[in-house]
Amino acid sequence: MAQHREVAGAYWNHELSPTEDFIKYYNREKTLVRKDDIDGEGYAACRTYRRTGWAKRPGHDGLKDGFVYGISSVVTPPQHYRRGYATYMLSLLHLHLQPPSSIPSSLLPLKQDELVSGFKPGQADELPVALGSWLTSDVGSTFYSKCSLQEGRKAWVVNDSQNSGLKWAIKPTAPDFDEDKVEWIYRPDIESLSKELSTREKARLAEADVSKGAIWAEDPASTGALAFLPVKSTWYDPSCAPHPVGVRIKTGTPAEDPIVLFLTSFFPIGFEFLVTLISKLTPEYFPLALQAFDKAASDAGRERGFIWGLDPFSEIVEAWKNQPGREVEVKKRAEAKGGLMGTVYYGEEGQEGRMLDGQMWHWL
Image 1 (cartoon, rainbow, N blue to C red):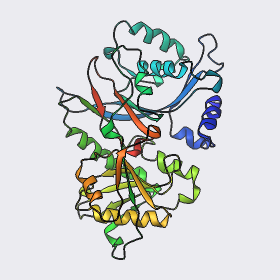
Image 2 (spheres, one colour):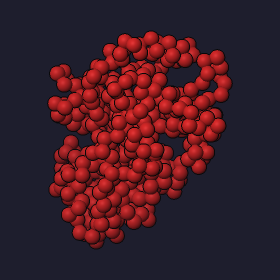
Image 3 (spheres, one colour):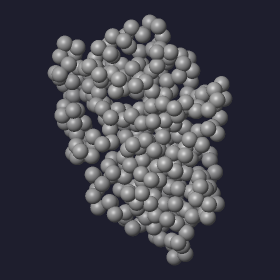
Image 4 (cartoon, rainbow, N blue to C red):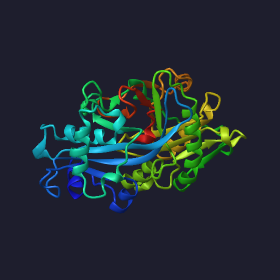
């Protein structure tokens, strides 16, 4: 762990999070080491975050419960650059997360030998197989897709439609903004709110069209899932702690209330006002939501907003574009340090699948 923290801190040029908080929100660090020196030097490492989730599969009734994994902080010590260690480590991890039914028989002995023997006693059981996994890439859209030992099957694939970015201009708080029509969400509210958003996400997945392949989703109620970014943002900028991290638009029917989560400060992603999750926000309530964004962003000194993962052709994006004076810009996020989300589905061999969406709350 100490080696990984040192290398990761040097790469991203910042102090890593307080250990006691960090451990609360992550599962395990994975390190590539020599078989004959398990406690020795690491050749590559990453962090894995285990969450609960669901998958909707073609030809099956209902949703399948299981685990999903987020992967982050993939690093190689400088003395081992460009030797393929990170690729090999992620290929082994990718293989371990797959159920045996999705692995060609020629690779099953590798999974049983190279992976299981690489764990200390009892550790293999702490990394159960997954429905899917994702990572956010700062090194382009193709590198992580190659981290697979299976011929013809890619690893983490960046879907362009889920990797858009929308930026817009923040305006001063409107004189007619009626704050009684909204309810601000603060960091202590996240835990209780996550259960409501979990119910909504599960229902959205149940309604999804799987005619072109399976779809899987992370459960917002997983420990640390929604709390991760609000907590981590205070490590970088303690002054943001008193600010709200979301807003509920009151419709009179709580189950239909639009809910939006955001960050007023999180420098690892950008210096804008960051919208991390939207739920049930429709064009009807969008103008009020935008006024709430202006209020929260202006109070924090932000001049532009940024949101990930919206369908560029959706109604909500059109509503954004139609607001006068907002200088809306929609395009795929940058290849370098753009936080591109790559995803993989672990279904039966030959089956295709994708993640439900690519909103910013999945960032790790």
